Image 1 (tube, rainbow, N blue to C red):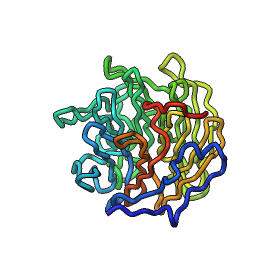
Image 2: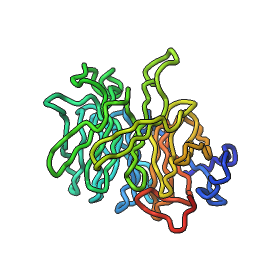
Image 3: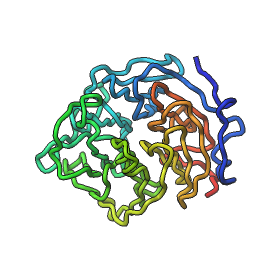
Image 4: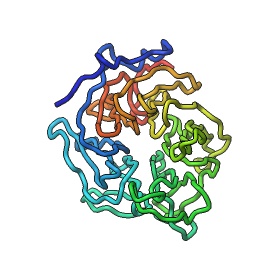
Length: 316
């Protein structure tokens, strides 16, 4: 049963430009509950299906308007972030297998890459696919620091990097090694900027560590330069985020989805009653923002689309 929540959790507007992102009747809804820690939402357009990861439970869940909540995949080796490639296939980050995986159209799961320089990756966390088909992903240690979200093991890498993988050639390169613990990532609409969150505060209880989003220039479509702090997100972390067709950033935080303009201004806040992990655009018209937060899946309809699905006449 869908539960409407906006009456008790109204949207907060900090900048009048933000109103262009919302319908007059935009409201937060809870679609499903029952997860342990929800992460990595991805919309399968051809199936009308939202899939996401329940990491500690070692499973993936799905929701559709027709069937509601279902178990999508059991024993998935602690899948975290998910995205869709240019052919509509599901691409996933496996903590347990320390790999980037792809689900073929027949349902078969194949490992795309699990090593760099002959050594195992840490635990791929979040992933995006560029328009040229290359796969960019973050590789922090969160899946190897304990057995809760993976398998405890020492790191075999020299650090926590963002990688670029070309499935056409099999080549994997370090896009940047300038982030302490990279997590969520997303391209600007023109793919000239990659936003990457640094969540090194996640494993620390002494108040140190980072909880910000960095922006990088994408040079020659292959490497990242000129890192600068785009936004310090609080409370909590910018665990995962998406960019819309205007270039506005919808990011998780401890208690909400926060909306940022590309100039760094915080535009609005969508309160959520649980700790938020991530979000993605989907739905039949692409104007639904699905939000994963602790035990539940939420949705809000917006007057915008994902960066890959332009909206006509959108103000900057």
